[in-house]
Image (cartoon, rainbow, N blue to C red; front, side, top):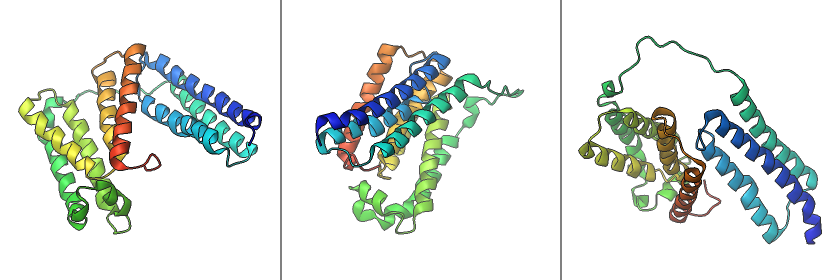
Length: 244
């Protein structure tokens, strides 16, 4: 396909990308922070729906009609714009909390969630013990073997355990190192790249919204670049870019 015939496709993608970027900037201005709850999803969206398709078109040409591209990229733009407008314009509900929970009252809850998640996922590890060094195979085959409930419930419990641990005020190195190590190891054994990256983003959101850390534009670039590098390493460990 001649390069001139690709200009229409690239124009559609560029205009749509502009709306997505403006939507992300609007949320940044609303929260007065360059890292926020939408950053991870927004950067992922730009990579998956704009950067990689652009490279694919340059390498292999288009595999759809101009009307199909127009429909898809209008949808991407409008969904991002609607999300940003809703968040920025609608006043949030103010809930009155008379007895605020003490983070230190969490006690052994993080460890309890971690142990429970491990026990629920244990049948999967036993059934696929030959793939313990290749957890991506576990991810590829767990649903066909009827372990969907074990997989998703344990994933949820591990993430909840990690979140609960972040909220504890009193942490010691003796407690933190084994907890984080076990949590990362068990999530790694799920074979899901997204869940490993989610731990990093959860930590960032905790810094921004709970500890009230302001992340400047320059620091945000460093953070996003580091996440991109980390994602590349995780992709290399788990498989191709086309995997989830």
